[in-house]
Length: 321
Length: 277
Image 1: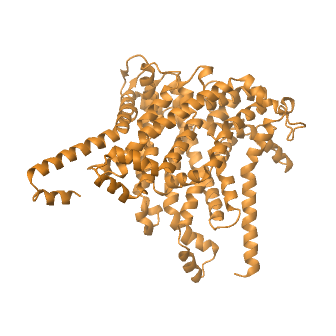
Image 2: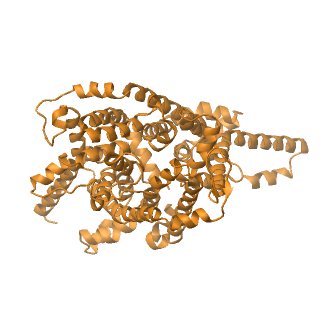
Image 3: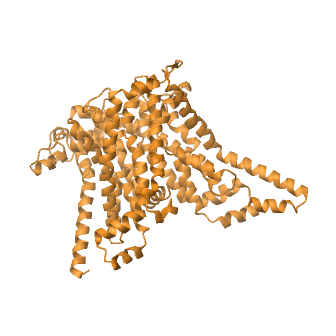
């Protein structure tokens, strides 16, 4: 485009050139007007809050009164704070145990639905619908299902087993959380399904000619081919786990009203819940420091994942994402 | 593969599918069942109620101002959807059918804001809204949506890119202004895409708990999501899970209905977010 303008500039008379420049300026202005909602929103609701809370993170601050500079004190206190370690531990637990379960079952469901078959639409709908249930509603629902004497405890009873006390036993609260989020795996399933559909049949046929069995085909064709999709899911999943809040809030509030301690025994204290508690206690400097630590963790996860992308993602599909 | 082994494989796959489908449907089944369980039985661990008590649905309207919650939620949803469409359509147009220097760089900046957790932003946003005197109103929940969000810009751009460039170039050659092209050609052609973004925003605003929980305090101003959590907390103490489940059904049902009417749009939208990250 610009080459064409430059080439024609030498041959056209100056008045035409001026008209062209005027048109260019008008077009730039048009772009600016079209973008203005985003530009204003970015400056006011994103950039300013980030920079502002960066400043606040070095201060003692309450709303309505000026901030007092305390240097790194908030960060030092944060990292010696048992609650923060608990919250990070809970997050790690959810990432390490929750994500593989969710991705595994979503992949199983997608793999079973990838071939066109009668009835697949119905199954797909049934697996997907739970994921449109708002997180607080699925939280309330599983809080009911898993409570003492609830339907799922009843089912445990049918098998003669004692149902765990999901919301009173710190050992079982996080598995309950993983259970709800696994129920809502519909988005993952759809994304994986789209990835599976894109794998050319010819690759499987070639593998079959080489005598590959079902597992070998999965291991050497399916997995490498959908590795970009899994990479995307793991990356967004890790960032998501760090923000997990709604269901943990419903579970722990249902057990004990009041302060956000993540009952039972802090086992449901998520990072976002701890930050909200500091915010509600009016410790804005602390809450801002936590916001920035979260920002940095998100940034580091993304950068590390992107830098090591070649290790996870099959290279023949490099141009894909 | 022999014929009998193939049949066995198909039967095996179907039984796994049926098993999974039952597990995924069971929570809905118990939600509906509990929502019509009489109060005395809800407090015990009876799995199947002796009678269906639809009075629970009336009772929950008496117990909490559910009608207010519904009204407030619909107000927030309508404004959020309107704001998002009005602000994101022009931005997405500039990123798809106009050429300008720096477009790629700015688009990466837009996408990178999608990564930012709300937790990073709200501490400071709260002071802005507090200074404006907007606490305990819907304004903090809806005003930002009039200033475009990355996710919707991204989705709309994906849809706009599928539109025929020849039509747009022809209109430009005929002297149509960019605003005319946007309103007369792109918007009518991209209606399914705009619809998808509207539905996703509706779903998001309907379900959101974190924002309304921070900004709304008066009982009469709450949205359904916050109201449900408070009801759940109160009902858990009294063992009235039948009321919580009745409220949950009221909260979830509209979304399920929307899903069934717009299934194709849903699935396309979700797939788009995943495959072109």
